[in-house]
Image (tube, rainbow, N blue to C red; front, side):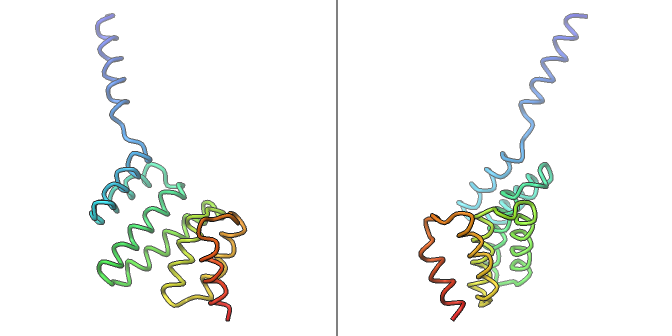
Length: 145
């Protein structure tokens, strides 16, 4: 009986050690993006989000992957998914600086500069010492002229 319990315990420990976390999927997705494997990265981010659907970080990363896919293909469906992912990240965490800047940049570079302003302003409220604060301020000024 003791041997059976030890085997069950060992198998439980081994299987727990092999289970991937959402962060594992996000990390792998980031590695794949770096290699230019956009489609695979999207799959990994989606897998991570299945495990942790309320991850603002995961939705932001997925939005960045969709941005890469849009830049690669020019297909506007990817742009829609990009925006939706950033918006979901902000629904989860309205002060998530990365998603604020990313959504602002998406609108800004899509020609919707006035829409970008509210995200940029909020980002600077959340993180006034953002490393790109001067550039963001210039973009706000340009959009408001």
